[in-house]
Length: 337
Image (cartoon, rainbow, N blue to C red):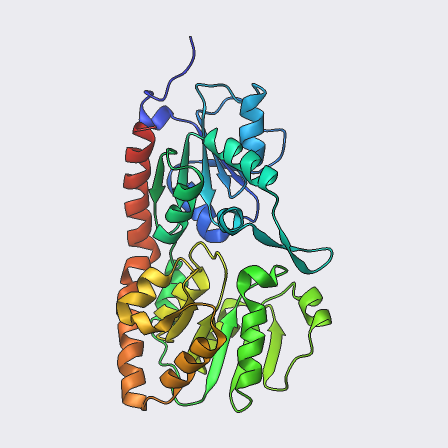
């Protein structure tokens, strides 16, 4: 007799299959008692639920060919720009370093494979809306990522320097289109008297392609303690991404009390809007530049007020409370699959 998902919760076997192995996503998996392995074409057969980090292709195809049985459930944690790319049909071609149109046939095949899933976990309402446009009938739940507890304790104590005209971005490559680095570079060039810093690695192709203005520094990967020092000396966090499911680095900047200007194609906008809707911008460079300079022209007391508001809204993004809520929501979710 085949196993069904009516098994007692303690007997339910869950396998989390990672692609990027983001530490926050891994902790979410650990909290629900999942075993953890890298995603490949060869996966163990004796699990009730398979959860993939981002990639929907492998699990859907394995199910189509009977390698995953119909009574076994597959769920994707949508945590990257895939859904955004399918909706807008643009993405970066890494070989040519140019933006290419995604063919309609690829979109239709992707939709077919996503429809074969049993469920989805979205890291923001923004990501959930993107999924609904592709697969409106797929059952899904929305749950925000978090700032890890030990880091949260350090960041919440930061008193940022709000009068230094220093702008920060944190993110890894190589997808500069997804992270909006082309826009960040243009804003840097428009503001030669401001100091811009980018923390993160794998930007070699972007650096080869572009001439950097003298007021922009790429400082590479940094450990949490080093990042904390950059946050302490920054006025503003600027994230102009395209399809960022949430943006944990934005949550970390908010926790540190760094005011954030982010794009309207970024999941964390739900939190930024609670502080000030004006800090969420579209891709109009003039508007982005105006918003940045309007913020920087504020007196220190006004900036401090905004900083405190950002700190307050991140209480819901601290690991402990977020994980408790996730465990409850996840168990309710899979009962309804």
